[in-house]
Amino acid sequence: MIPVHWSRPPEGYAKINIDDSFEPNTNNGGTGGVIRNHLGEWITGFSSKVKVDSAHHAKLLALLHGLKPSQRKNIRQLLMESQTIKHTSREPNSGADILATHGRISKDHMDENQPNVFDASPPFVTYALARDATGTATYRSFPFCNE
Image (cartoon, rainbow, N blue to C red):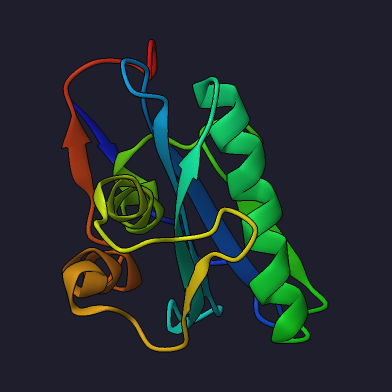
């Protein structure tokens, strides 16, 4: 078992964790992301339902969707993590993972060019964020492969 946990950005920086969710049989996808400050506190987040051709396509949209709310909040010092840009396993990226899945399975009509932006943490992601902010590790039973 390998302990993994979310790591805070340095003081003066914000960190965005982005993720995607993709169902290849239907081409339904979702993007999600969480932006937090150096204390692990919620700044903003997003979730979006998208129609995509691949998981890679969904990841690129997650990147684009993540930059929009950070620009809207005028965040100048931003670190970005995903399972592709700077590899982080699913567990410490759980807030973004939950939001991406929410986007994919949401019954609400969402426009892939206008993600649903949350100025306050949605209740369904609060536990994962609290676990991250306290530095609580989760355990992974195998190395980072085939995520």
